[in-house]
Amino acid sequence: MLEALAGYEPERPGTIGALVETLGGHPNTTRAHLARLVADGLVGRTTVEAGTRGRPALGHHLTDRGQLVVQALRVSRPVSTDELVTAMAEHLAGTRDPEVHARAIGRRWAGQLGALPSPGARATPPLDLVVGLLTTAGFSPQVEPDGDVALRTCPVLSSARAHPGVVCTMHEEMLRATLERSSAADTEVRLVPFAREGACLVQLSSPSVR
Image 1 (cartoon, rainbow, N blue to C red):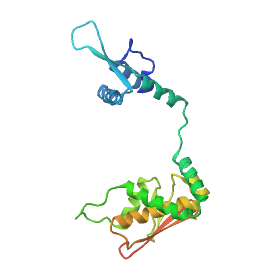
Image 2 (spheres, helix red, strand yellow):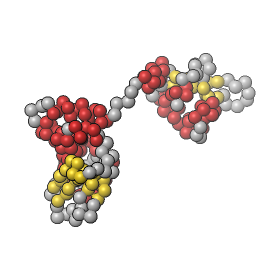
Image 3 (cartoon, rainbow, N blue to C red):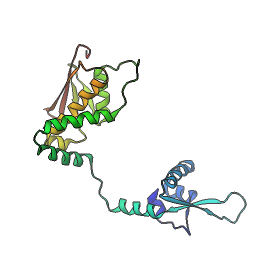
């Protein structure tokens, strides 16, 4: 939307009809996006006199802030999560006890992933909880016949290959802390990095898992 508005000026703003013609979609969808951009201060709104009866059309153009954002989008290179985690892992690897720091980060991460279960809520089985959490995190987990969970994809694969002692430990502790927060502290969790070709393994052991 911002790119589409880059060709318009306050003296010659873009109408919703013109933007729909450029971007496609429904006018109501375009109108909703524009309202959000106006509220964020990225787009300005003016009245366009059509010279006919009826409600005058609304024109839109980039504000100074909106122009800065478009310029930044055009020249910036997105930084992947993997790159950020690699930088963090390299830093931690140089500390006195990187595993301790990795586990502390994993616990903080778990605290940010979701609220504590409400009192009286039905407890989610540990295996279902772990699979759901890993799916949300981008790991494509698959439950195997023996109850292990195979991780077929990893959102930070390069980082994990370079620094498994930091990155995989962080993921393992995130799972452990989440289970504890969900009243499943009796469930032991172990993440085995690159346990087999094309997959890491998460192993759970508890009377309540099976």
